[in-house]
Image (cartoon, rainbow, N blue to C red; front, side):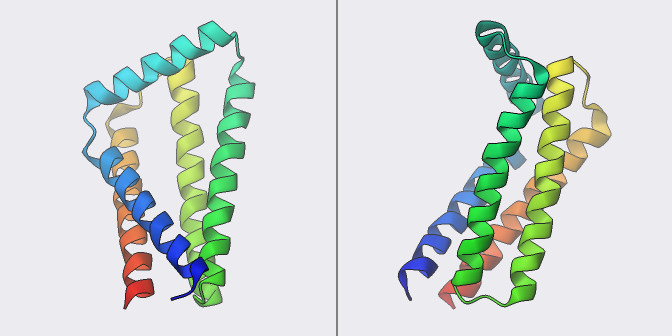
Length: 135
C-alpha cells in the first residue's frame, strides 16, 4: 500500500468517525451547536454570507482533497465521481443547515431526518472506501 492510499485510509476513517458522531447526536447536542454558532457570530460580528462562504470554502477544500486522494489511490474514475457527487450533496445539506441555524429557523423533522440520512451515507462511504483500500 502506497503513501497516498494510507492517507486516504486515514481520511476515510476520520470521515466515518465524524459522520457516526453526527448520526448519534441528539437534538439537545444539535441545539447546543447552533447556540455556539450564534454566539460566535455575535462575538465576531460576522454576517451570514461571510460565515456561509467560510463554511463552503473549508468544506469544499476538504471534499476536493478527499476526492483527489481517492483518485490517486488507484480507485476507478467512476468511484471518484460517486464520491464527489455524494460529498457535494453533503456540502449542500451543510450549507442549508447552517443557513437555518443562523436565521433561527427550525430544521423540522424532515430536515433532521435528511441530516441523519446524509450522516449515515457518509459513514457507509467512509467504511466502503476503507474496506476497498484494505482488501
